[in-house]
Length: 331
Image 1 (cartoon, rainbow, N blue to C red):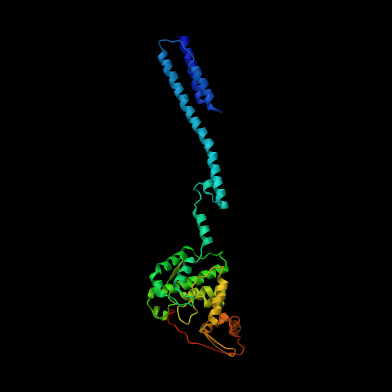
Image 2 (image 1 turned 90 degrees about the vertical axis):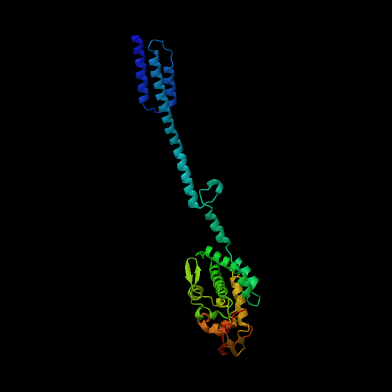
């Protein structure tokens, strides 16, 4: 009996010593070896129940330790994968690569949608609105516009959703501001319709009134024309494109301006106005719109400018006078 107790005491000390040491490699083989030793046949005795209990406790301790070690190993394996995924995401973001299959939903699709929206943004809404309510001769059906005012409001909402971008071309920027000016002039009339003249609005100073809310800013019509369009673009032909809603004003076109049509339409509008009924031109005498007086600085030598577009050749020493302006609504 003493020899048997000595044997089991030695066995127990050996097992406990093995448990206290951290394995340098996979602990599973060592554990299996230790369990096999514990499972070797032993002689039964009156104390065999106590010995078996000690063995079971030892095996449970080994199993518990094995689970902890396995858990640590799994974490070590998973960590590099997570780091690699993070690095891939960062690279994709830096290169602005958008691929929903590869990135799942990690990179928002809003980036791609914004880029597409910038590319396809046009003034088609305003173009359709003008074609529906402005004649080819520039007469405006304000009554019809009033019944469909929500369409103009939708276009203004679109303008606010697509603010002017610094990287846009010169023509795209200028087309944007011309359309903005004309759209808000029409909106001003509709907000006060029926009205006989634009000069009956805002105490006779509708162009100085700051009410145009666009992209977080508030403008007046004068600010758009005299602080943005004229100084930034130095383009005299814009005077025949922006519309003041009066009979003597250059006729508003039944179209919106786009970057690719801007130059052609500015040429068309300029030639139509100069050769229209608003001006009387002979070789020796001209009586032209007050626009040429108000904005004389923009046109430089007036006769030279007119001769670029006039159907009648004007003498350099022709007399010049300016016609009275009719402010009645252009309907």
